[in-house]
Amino acid sequence: MSHITLSLLLSLTELTLSHLFLPPLPIPPSYLLPLFLAHYLPLKIYSLFLHPLYFSPLRTLPTPGGNLPLLGQTLTLLRATSPVQTYVDWANRYPRAPFIRFLGLFHSEMVLVASPEAHKEVLMTHCYEFKKPDIMYRFIGDFVGKGLLFAEGGEHKIARRRLNGFLGLGV
Image 1: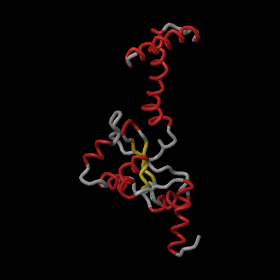
Image 2: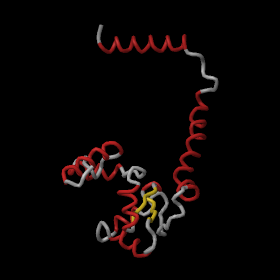
Image 3: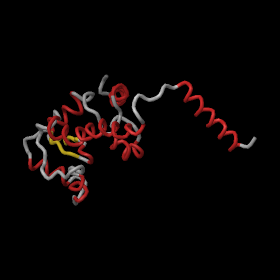
Image 4: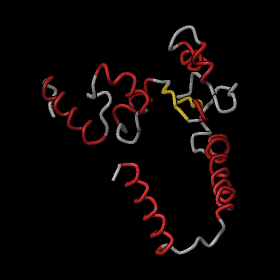
């Protein structure tokens, strides 16, 4: 028996058995797509527009204006003369703000740490409460590896202890 004939026979057997053992759908198949869209679209509208603009706990942080729909500040960051110029401009615009919130692609919320005190909070005092962006590791992690800079949670604690012992700073 050829491979095509065997696969066709198996497909017909599965189709026949599925009709014998599976109960019929309570709704007609033509209603599945509209039902899926009725559940999916409100969720996407909420996550793309309503949450970042109205319900996010970060919305009280200073946010630079000029966000584009679905792009946020992505074009501003891409058009900058240097990779950090936009961040420096925002830090100068909000000199007393420890954190500056901006929207990225598809309204993903990002936070710029803009003061030395905030850096200390993020990197030392509360370092395990902040998640590092995955995109950062994808681009830079291939070159430098997953060391102290990109480690999270328990891996980060172990790497810090090892580094402190290596430098003679204690445990």
